[in-house]
Length: 302
Length: 51
Image (cartoon, rainbow over all chains, first blue to last red; front, side, top):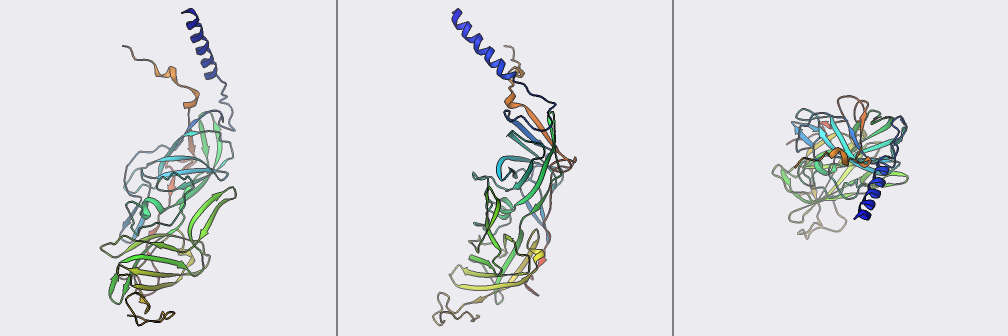
């Protein structure tokens, strides 16, 4: 029995010695890398809401929600994910951001912050594929494709307080509202392929040691039918000059339509809400069900 | 039975560090901010944005 008490005493002593490892609160240049910290950014009141985008008339509002997540990267490597507590108001533009398991921050560290809207297992997911044409709900623009970024610098580490520079999040794409018609009739597309004449439409972004890189490419969507025949997409376009979007559309009967929107000003390609609710389309003569067309002839209009 | 003092079991691994940001995510009392998309811009030409 005495031997058992002796062993327990030795274990307790060893544990106490581990707990008493020195931590110098006067060190204001770094957070102890051997410790795990909880990162808290701001503390405002919670006003839980469920939507990240709200259409108020013709104004598209973007605001913090409890569903948001903010991912933190340093030196192009994932660090942690912050939970969001929105500020006051119906459409809070401020929030508290917190995370646990943060360690090894240094004064002067530059942190890249990314709002991915919806958590995925891949910390560097930044994709525009798979959109369903809805503004809100699962797989919608609001819950998954509304990316925003900010960059901050750790300015001081003083005891249990770490201060960084100001962060303001900017939207990284524009949101588009599209509607299509043939003659006076609205079309409900079963699929839409959108390409950019300038070749600057982005399908995804990838993260490597060299930083984030755009992956250009056309985008094909399978939108969910809506009663108003309007569809919402988040499109990232990196062109510095006016661009043209070309559309290839199939309807529910597999009929093929084509359309385009030209002279989209470069200032509208990022951070804007753009609308074209009645885009005229032409049906190609070689579309399925039309045996009169000739391959290569795309001039026919119903 | 008397409740145990949980503070006895706090280890360095759970130490809390607050990161306050100068203004927004990092700083002012307003918290982290983000921009909105704003009012819709009609694109595509006359009639393209009509109901």
